[in-house]
Image 1 (cartoon, helix red, strand yellow):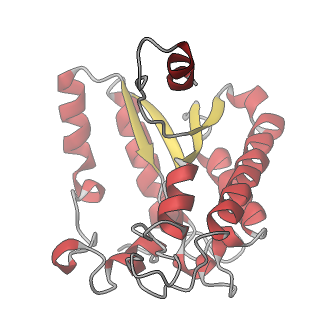
Image 2: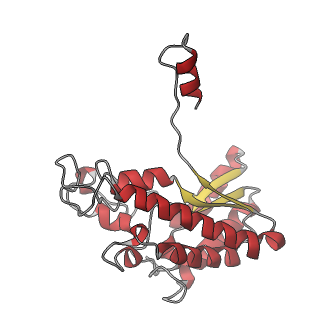
Image 3: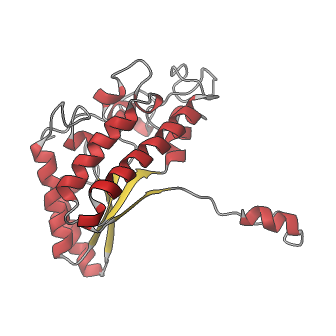
Length: 239
């Protein structure tokens, strides 16, 4: 829609059997067309902060500035950010919420975050976002839940895009071309490097003039001690 190219999630959703009833996300909550009404509802509810994610392939359909910028996609996020600020709501912007551009992911045999090349590609995208939106966005999140992306997409059962897991029968896409014993660690390593590269770009190139902060979102699980009376169990749960 309006110049947005497919992401790995678009591809994943259209593989038979990956999504219940073979549904897809072509039209979901339709925030693209309904953002003004949604922001109005948030304002009415008294919400002061809104965490949102940029769609990498909506802004850079082929993954990098050099391969083409989608002006309509860039404009859309300008509209959303301005609408939020006008309603007194602070945008918290995530750069990568698992939707790597398909064109970038399929560029090499290894694919996207399995390749060290992704570090510079992600930085290219992040640098562009900082330059375009950083005058108004002061809360940046580079990556959403790297553990989830690496383990669910490249290991375990391959339940998330891109569905690369082993030939084990438990793999959702049996024979998805992956190696569950090694690939999640390669992907996680490259994600850490990509975060560091983009964060350094922000801190050295934009932070002093724009005055924002940057980090990434990690997922955690709540833990309780197996035995509340055992100090070792209590310490383990605390860790």
